[in-house]
Length: 146
Image 1 (cartoon, rainbow, N blue to C red):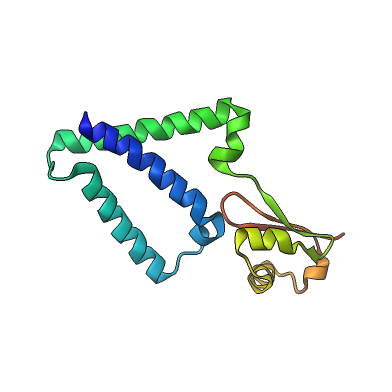
Image 2 (image 1 turned 135 degrees about the horizontal axis):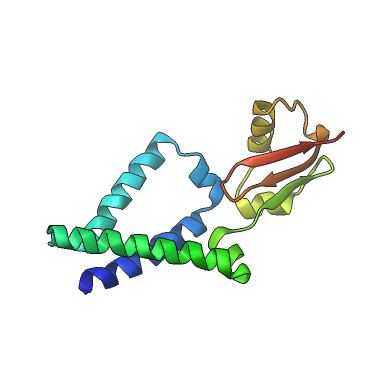
């Protein structure tokens, strides 16, 4: 039972940490970020199982994580008011060619990063953009002016 309680606590801890870190950072992992994720995963595993290396312990922990993930997904699907908390909401970062600085600061993005993403989508100038939206996945969607 101790393993299940640890798994529940760490599931919600990791969920909260990923929400705080931000979607853009998680979508652009540098080599150092990958190493940090591996180290964090190892630390979480040690906190979950302590000295329990049994098959039963592993099944309990993985099963608890799977059930929590299913519960979170189902709650997001069924309870519309929870969806922004669980999944986030898309954020408009450009409107009518104008960069919305307040939203950039909120998401810790720079204008240069948006310009780079626009160039990768064959948009030469932000003036051509009607809307740019930072999606829940961390990707930026651009809708150009017609």
